Length: 169
Image 1 (cartoon, rainbow, N blue to C red):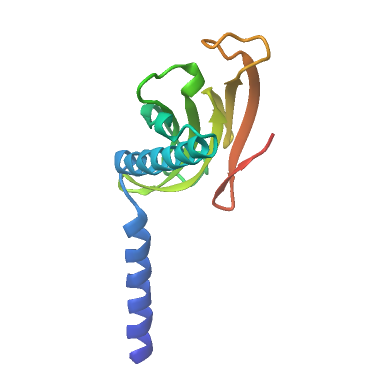
Image 2 (image 1 turned 135 degrees about the vertical axis):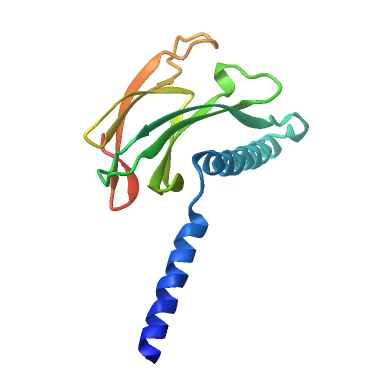
């Protein structure tokens, strides 16, 4: 009987531990964007301090999101594939943007947990999602590009392997 009680307690604690990390898509995105803007701002202040212009450090904020709901890991539960954009608060333009691909695994009952993320550059879009592969197009500045318009295009592909987001090309 003691063994049964211990086993039950372990199962309950494990379930509580997993569900404490689970959240709705909007809560998961809010946490992700708060964390990312904090990191961007810390890095900007460090760089500004190192270059001697600490008083002129930019302040980054969350700018936009694109969310696609799709079962990318073939477990029968919808996952959230998100492009999250950040920008400098005072003067948001192409040179101060940053886009991340973030995958939230659906675990049922509108609950999600983050699997991973990847920085995509200044501008990006999801080209397609096919057989668990997320194909994105990202843009950086070419040598002759004006400040408005990054044109150097690169294609990248990501997939979930062993519960993690990995780049496949």
